[in-house]
Length: 313
Length: 197
Picture: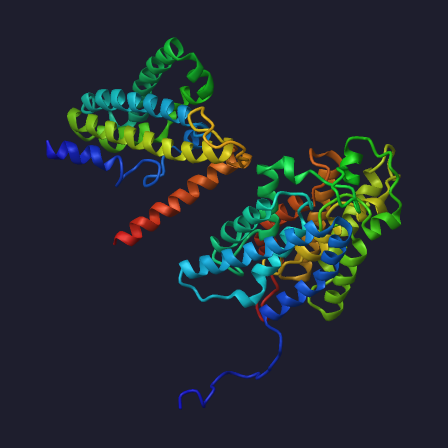
């Protein structure tokens, strides 16, 4: 009898949206990039993705069981973290790397903070940063695309950093993903396809990714070549993990600001930091670290861009 | 006698300086890269604790309250200098490994904290027992953290490589790994404490 009367306040709106539905739709939008990665780097890429996802979901289940919280496996967030981590790995990493990375991402970058919605840092990127710091040898061993027997080659940005950019990458090569790199970051077209889906359906807004990419592009145009205002900004936008990071990782709801104004600041900060690391930092690519640093700045951005409560000063 | 033993034991578990009092984390983070360094630092700190606790306890009624900190520092610095000179003479490799952190024992919060919280208010024999307990507790904590960091971060234990082809996680040998390991250990011990109650 007690469930027959539902007493809630108006408005009585019903929507299909829920956190879990959004997560699974983001997973869906990432599938083209994953398929492209497997096509470009071979079956091993598929195994890496599978292992990473399984490890992430298993870790989340184990921790939720151990801490006696409700199992929330079907909410898709652990799956998404595992997927994004795999997309940030080179295809030739040993199979235990995605396992260790996923365990770190879920257990330490997410569950220790309190689970979904409580983490400060993007878990997949925190996992990637941990893997990069711990096993740099494996995390920077990239292979030539379409060489299924693993011919090593450096990424365009790495070559640029060392001043050895002799191979010419055409914009089409970069858009289609015919370059060395991480599994999910190379095929820009597939990524943009997924991102357009999310943008049109309104699950992410243009503020963060467009501001981010525009800022990095602008910085690379101004400072990216020997003289000023001569940089090849299109090359830089299409290289590295910028597109993957801008559309799918910087836009994570939990770790980015709430208001549109805050999101623009966030995107600007990410873009600036990525460009600075690429131009003058030690690493050839800085997108993951830029996003992690701006994740740390999100609370203060939220504080200063909070919407004025109606009726107060 | 029972009280002496109680004071000694409390420094090891119930009031462990690293995991319960959370004192002296700076040298802990820096030094716990290898077990040998950890033991060396622990022994040096224990020696300083014993000496400084004894002298400060002896002088506790003579040191005016308003200048107590500089007085304690002078006493502690004396013992740290003795320890450093001994280390330089008999184990120069350890001295080089520990580097700046040997002189920094002077401002180690454990040493100064115990001086102010305990030795300034208790008899010499009790202060000695407290110093010994705290020092050994600190050493044990250092050994635990170093063992984890050395094995997982560099693949070795006390210089030996027990598992061949083990790919260590280099981050654990860096300060960020130290913070991670100490944080997780603290959480683990807090869990044990909570479960006990």
